[in-house]
Image (tube, rainbow, N blue to C red; front, side, top):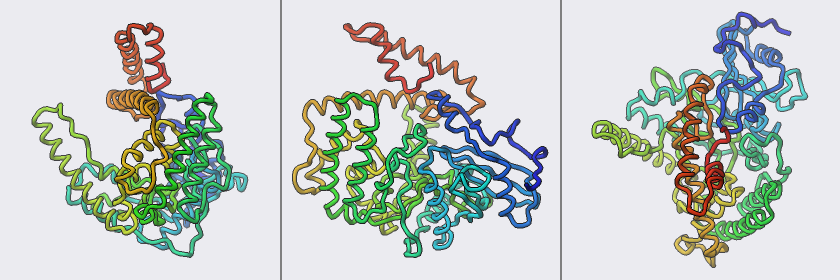
Length: 492
């Protein structure tokens, strides 16, 4: 084994632990989430591989651990001053082996065939049984510069627009030198957030697809499998399967109209094109040095990417409760953001495939992209999407009658479900703002002890409010159960 300066390593944490998750904790299912993020592998063997693939390096002098949503990353520095990045996936990141192989192929394609700046892959292994490391990994060049999110606030409006224009120009068609394999998106394999660590959908439904009708049919079959595997009351299962059948027929009708056919050209697009994954020159932030995190990139119908707007081009909500001076500044910032949003919209429109998809009806585009992202696994989301399409069926120019014809009972049920969902989402948003945490309840490790007393106080006040406002025929225990059901996190 190569010699490493393990005792002299310059570490950002008091005790360097490459195996466990230490960045934060969750207000919801914390113990399970911590456990599933604990990785078992040979870290020294990973360092050996990193040294071997780095020309002129003899030993490791520093290592920094960074922890994302689906991967753990190590920034490794050597005695010759060079750096590499070692990336290992979480068990819920996607289908084993395929996720790593697909990302490596994507990086090599983008590096060799386009002008998009991405890190060069130095070494990789998609088979944990092969070699000494014992886990899948990718070792790649370290991208210099700073994350766009860290300098965006100090940049001028003109610089913002120049960056967005540069990103819009980084496009290139796929060529015949690379083959297209199965889609590695988590939703195509039955992965449900971080609760699924092994594929539950069998191989064969993930493409590649010859046409849109086969693509839609497989999406519907995947959702049916998801419903069958859940331990739900029979009535709920039957209602969900009925919705899926309506959706299958709706997709058949929608897929045949000209607007959708013209919006489904195959497109290779970064799946997470946000400021945290874009690295720029700190001296000239309009110069893009690298774009990272291409995991689960796929060739998909263009409409899949027509709805989402990158965070650097999003329009902030204007808070009307602010005083005049602050409100004026907020309005100016919103005007600035609107110009960034319009610039992104223009650049996306100039991309032939994406631009065509952008002209698709918002209702239709939202339905299609939601189906592709796995929203039909949730009955309430699917019922809402179908209701929207049904309401605009004639305006959308779709021939025949919409397969989904909601009854009064359906409309009442949807209204109740959406009210409950909205209440929980409002609670999530409120707690996120109050506690300065993520909407899934994630809190930085150093803030946990200060946040918990405030959180518990809020929960107690919420339960008391539900009891105080309960209906005449509702008992105090009923109100407590209602409060428990609406509260978004399981920590009590």
